[in-house]
Length: 492
Ligand code: G3P
Image (cartoon, rainbow, N blue to C red; front, top):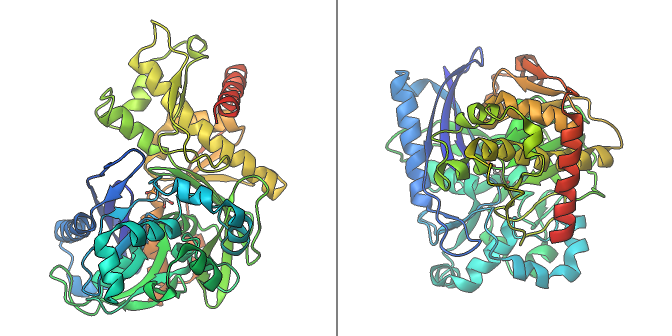
């Protein structure tokens, strides 16, 4: 028996199969898909291409492992959050999805600033183009197909989980989970339902939105698909960062993790009590199960792995992500690059500064600067961004963090992990399963299917490595942290 998990991320889709009795990871298939940048600051995805990547990754992983589809007990979905989809009743896309990184609503957000405190209090989120609500507003104002469908009562809005669920269930289930809904600016955190006042402010009619459900429940069953049989239940849906928190077994108040994906997102569970930040973090829902809502504080950094992707695709100085480590290790005397800094603000800055119009920079180059140096400072730039999240989290929690658990593709880079431990003066714990997002969604589905309990998830979690803080380069990193903060202070 198996559990299938679908992780629809920003740069790729991953289908993972786990054993439904032992909960061991069996295999996964990943496929990247096209990113569209039609305008400065705009980022879009084609929903049909996303759907195709889901179908292909599922078909491939099932075929490679000779899996009899009648033995799939449950499906879990996890997804890039905030990315906004508009489709009609038939499940046909009406527009390209507006990706969470897209900055097109920056000015609109600015125009709403008088209401920022209201949005923060009710939804836990600042008014930033990151979140779905202003993207829906933009589609309603600017896209003729969306406008027409709205007029004809044929418009549905949702995040990626909702679009996938709608298609997987043959257009019978139009739902989302609380963790995804908490990223829209439209959900009230206390009662986890769409808020009239916030919906009205953004001009989004509640009837266009999916039903908000608990993260673990009966979301529907597969129907009318050509790659899966009818009748497989979908029992777990979580936004990708919340799925990773779940997979890292951060169920206790004060426990947390940081996922190094396209961006990097640090979440700390605050239990059933929602906590507001004084240091630029978000208040969000971790998950809801059996009537209880669990909240988290979140630091959202827009660029982590995407910076490595930029080195690969735009600068073309590496062929694959792993090469950044080898090249960075070629830099023998790091003191010679102490003034070299890569600030990877390619899509603005999220937490803790919230500067939607900030731009990336590579500063401090000399004639001696080479591609090895750039790889090294790219890794440092990622760690410095995350360091800002760690600092904010410590201040909000009023204490040092018990543990810094990490996951996501980029944590395979040992040098990056050591740099993080040294810059942030924190010990970094890497688990055995670093694809915790997919794994977390699979475990949520397994719980929903009655195959395991939350307590079992904690038993599944195993440590692989610990990167302890070293003081060898203390002065170097102190100098860099200072340079980093000054640059941000002066420029943004
Ligand atoms: O909020 C955006 C986040 O969900 C994207 O995650 O893994 O695609 O970087 P990822």
